[in-house]
Length: 364
Image (cartoon, rainbow, N blue to C red; front, side, top):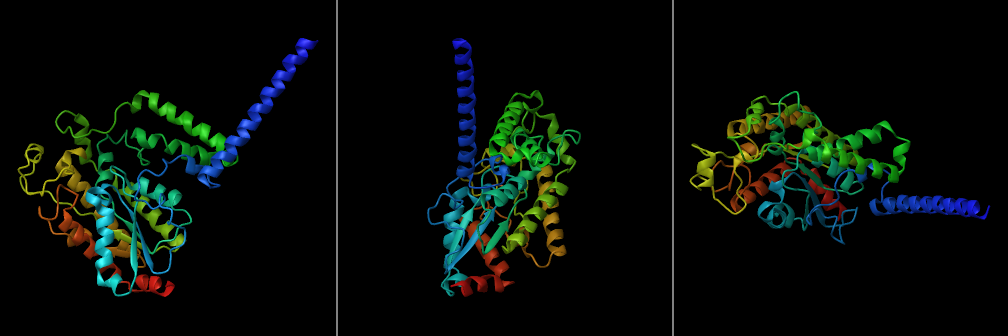
């Protein structure tokens, strides 16, 4: 009898210990993420030091005398010291200097990120934060998703193993609203789905990367599949900005491909670019003519959305940016002169709706 009692006692102790551990994990996860939405567990945490969230003085409310901008994009918003240089350029502009406003530019840019990433980052990273302006600038990275056959392409971009780790978890949370209230259950589900993605054979192949000659799927990018997805994501960010009463700026995407472009001539430095250490060959995204077609289609989406929503701020940056090597170091990244031109475009956009800047002035 004593041995049975000991076994029962040990089992009870183990059960109680597991329950205590589960409660501590549940409370700990909620404390770390400071949210009631389990989807914050799914998307990767803060990934760089220029997105505001790692600054001790970055509060949810905008301080008086500050004009806070959120830049939603990818590598263009981080390459070549974009954030500090763009912030300095805007602060020097009379639009802000004469109003005694200090621009605070928060960049969510991360290389290779796509429209889905900007939607998720804005929704989860910046929930509860106020902005005087949210800029949406995408066009080239979504083009990589076209490098898949139509029967493999997914409109949640889950043909990429990167997105496949997140989207099924989001779907599971939507389908199980009661179970997903537990952060612990959602966290375990996220880990299991991530492991499944890693070991699934169909996701061993990533999208082709800077290898235009050897990958037969490159030709699939001639069938543009991304514009509807691009549009849906852009509109979702726009709608979220409206809910949060954040002024929203839609920008077309700038690019430059010199005449006679080829991968070989790019790698040899023979083209009309101001080559820099950060210069990237167009073939990172696909064949040049396919990439250009995708950017043009995505810019067409932005122009259409802007035409349908005149309440939204819009600037056609693609037509404003000069197309030459003095402004570009590659197809989509700028020189210092290109960054200055981009800053001028932002100012021109804001001048078309002066009430946006005036709101910040009145807050002071």
